[in-house]
Image 1 (cartoon, rainbow, N blue to C red):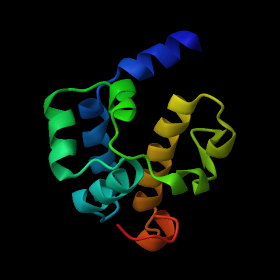
Image 2: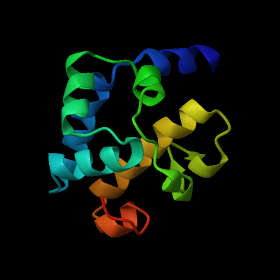
Image 3: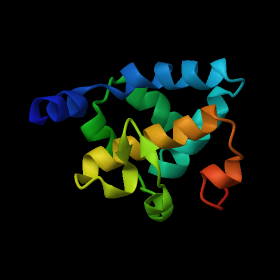
Image 4: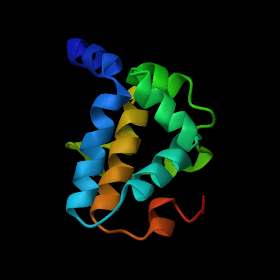
Length: 121
């Protein structure tokens, strides 16, 4: 497990971002939808997201340097990859799974106000 966690920490945001886009676009959603939920979660703006993709920033740095993690992120609950996101003890892994869960909800067609836990961007 520790080796797997280290591998995830070192993965670049640029390597998973296109996978998120593919996942939602297959379901008729857009890049804007993905950017909206990632912006809501992390506080990165469009230029910030473009920069971390271009710089191939690893996930650990991506979250460590996030401009403003959303205080409502703790409202993100449910299963993702077999884990209850609200029960994940490692703060980094919880952040990764929060992002996965938000993108999954976009792909499943949930309303944006529901995905953003009642707030707007």
